[in-house]
Structures are given as structure tokens and as C-alpha cells.
Image 1: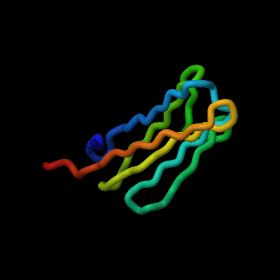
Image 2: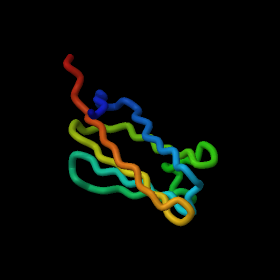
Image 3: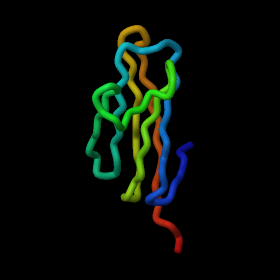
Length: 91
């Protein structure tokens, strides 16, 4: 089941890897179907909280479905996929 948020609410997406990956990439697709990619160490939007723990924040301004994935390569080659929904406030 998807998490549901109101527009302009901070959404924190996080991943915990079983081993520390060599590279961590985060991809998010919003309602416009445009995919944005962030790489840890290159893009400040992807944050390492501690060993094996990463997060990215988004303040969505469009209603609809958002899909995202964290991708680890190297020592921990794995991806974690999830999604959330954004709706207009009822008032």
C-alpha cells in the first residue's frame, strides 16, 4: 500500500543496505513521468546518514503518484523500490 501525502509536505525516502555499496544512486519519477537521478557523493540531494543508511527528501508540488528506487552497486548490488501518492488538500 502506498503512503499518501498532501502537496508541499516533506517526504523522506530512505534505504538501508545489508552491506555498504560502492555506489548509491537514487531515482525518482513523478506524475509528469520525468525521471530524476541523484548519485551519492555527486548530488547533495542524496544523503548518507551512516554506514549503509541513505535518504533523499522531496517536497512534491504536483498531485499524483511518485515512484522511486535506491540502487547499490559493487559490494552490495541491490535495488529497493517504493512509491507514494500526493493529493490536494480537501479544503
